[in-house]
Length: 361
Ligand code: NAD
Ligand code: GLY
Image (cartoon, rainbow, N blue to C red; front, side, top):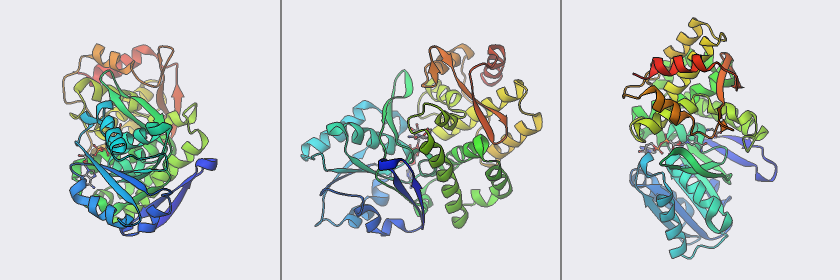
């Protein structure tokens, strides 16, 4: 097992990464203070891992309850979070309780948000079970839900007590979801880690074949890159925005085509390529560098174009409902070079329009 620490003073926490971690109960129990534990999962993950996690906690030692949510990005709503509150209240959970998110990013974001707001904040633990949630969403304390008018628009920062990443859970994850996780991995490389980019380019075939020891390295490197940025800027007043490379474009794809059509990671794949193209049009990247990014995305079986029909003006309208918009200006994350991202406020509108028109049919 490898352990990383996300350094946030009194809110610091460990991220455990390895195989067989869902057999090691003490990783969970040492971060649980009270007796009441609510495991939040969904209809897909429950039959796979719920009993295993329950058995780790020991029924005698804890009052264990569970909520099994419907599966899907379309259920990432306040109504669904309310089901968690119902279960907490029906079972008379008090402020010493701990919520455990068992699942992908959708379960993790909603459980974290419930933990942030139940009785003004209770403990929670992340057990991410998709590649995307293991390399990104379980780390850093962003929690929340979608609104019909915008992705992740309702939420809170609330850090978990620990993150337990068992890469063995990826054995049951299908290839499309695995690829979606690779999009966020590639993001770290593009935004700030050229050595990691070269590693991914060299080893992409083995990584896509899910070589276990390489997967642990992949998750570790991704979490380390994210933890370093979050430690410097927990609340995204500055540098953390770099983690949104491709996201303003990607969220617009998700929002315009409807949640669930494109997986989040797939939308981010196309969104990153749009950001990379704009970086090229702005004169930062060469055609060869753009081709390198496209090649890596394609080898990860990720989309590089929008397959549904989106009208360019609708896309632009969706982009302007994004958390990166400040005083009406859409801030974008662009690349000065591969492995070197920056927050850009002064891109040329005509070049942004050219990118959007190129991608929207
Ligand atoms: P997801 O949670 O929808 O999971 C994808 C699918 O895989 C679901 O059907 C799920 O039930 C299933 N699944 C989960 N674990 C499985 C397993 N081990 N075996 C088989 N199937 C399994 O999607 P995701 O890609 O994990 O997360 C996407 C969400 O994460 C989006 O809502 C996105 O906004 C959010 N996100 C949040 C952050 C953050 O910092 N909080 C960062 C990135 C993404
Ligand atoms: N996924 C972006 C962030 O956590 O800041």
